[in-house]
Length: 291
Image (cartoon, rainbow, N blue to C red):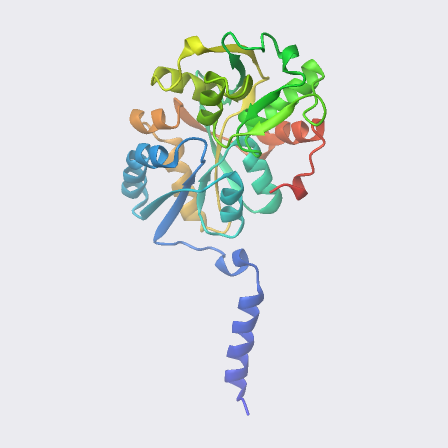
């Protein structure tokens, strides 16, 4: 027979195993922080560009930092949901999806560019191609990035519907190409006659010579979108959360900020992203059913 102490130990262990991951990780202060960056460009390039960030966070937080880039937006959302990462740099809509699946995550910082915590999607076409205006998109393929991307899918898709009465279910054929740079290259090469991506990312690709500005036409810009947020697990200790928050909000390193394509980080909260929930309503998207 089990003695009372042995029974209590087994019962406690069994209960712990049955609890959700976050429930028995309350107040955790790990020696290593896993920081995930959004896979909106080539993963190897993102990780290489993030090495100054890794060094800065290790020096500032006195912890080992592991930089990771997931295979796609859905994988990043699931990694945050199941506690496989502590800090994540989300796209605006992928954050909204993550929050719907993991209510305890906390957005705390947002990038500021040209003095604003917002950015825009740009809708582009192949220079000399069949799409001269967005009205010409009807009946043709249109290039988007990841399905959970804000500026390379949701915002331009809502723009086409709201401003041009072009419905992706009936009026044109959405083609998902994965990343922003893939969209730009496909439009440049005429593989799709038009597409959409983040305006800051397109500007960066042109500046680096990865996209020829003479081979594309920038047609229209979306409405302003709240910039990419950084979120952390809500079950970290208050002291660690405050240290992480301060590390980003007080960041001054120009090289690191450049890798995020921003000037600085500002404080943010969940309400700032309600506009993306409104976008989901325009597109009749069920957040609970999306990956």
